[in-house]
Amino acid sequence: MKATKWSVGLCALLAGVIGWCLWPQPVAPGLVTEEGEAPAADPGTLVELTPLAAMPAPVLKPAPVTAPVKPDRLREDGSQQLETPWQAAEVDADFPLAEPGEGAEQPQPIALQGGELGLAQVGDSVTLPLPDGSTLEARVTKVELQRGGERNWQGEIRVDGDSYPVNFTVGKQATFGFIGTPQGSYSVETLGGKGWVYKNPPLDRGHGGSDALIPTHQ
Image (cartoon, rainbow, N blue to C red):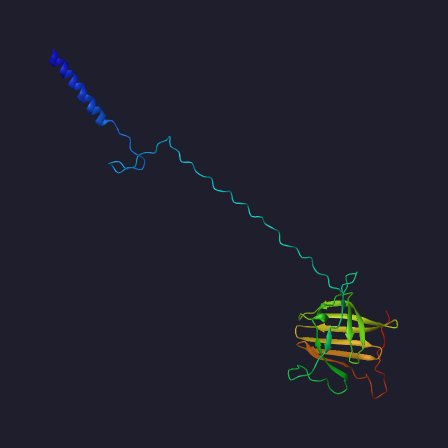
């Protein structure tokens, strides 16, 4: 009877030892098991993530708007005063045009300034310097673009109530002009921005004709 009790107790003890050996033991965090696999993370242990600091949104500043600058020569009615389209120049070795031929009076070498002659619009006033130092003011009455790309404008000079014709053709390289005055007419010829302004010879010297133009009454 006693042997039977000892057998039962021994069996119970062995079962407890075997159960303790077979029961899965806790593994320390970061250790690797014998099979080479990392243990599953403990769902109860959460890593607190530090939120990133919010970056400020860039502020886009609109580009400054520059108002168009109106030139001082702009009049209240929108027309322009084009002053000094050419100035006196010196003849050097590179001057493109020879001096006007026989009969031309008061030839003066000139250089165009800033393309003023090519900017004229209907209603504009153009100041025209003459070889004798005087100036005349022409009012533009018509502008045309020709087939070759040249720009032609016509105008008039008013003197004592009379009108005298003005005509300019402006191209990329050459410019030709005619200026009528009570004392006669003048021509303007330039090439590459340089050339001459001179007084045309009288219409008929042999018959004592005057070089004055007949005004156009309008």
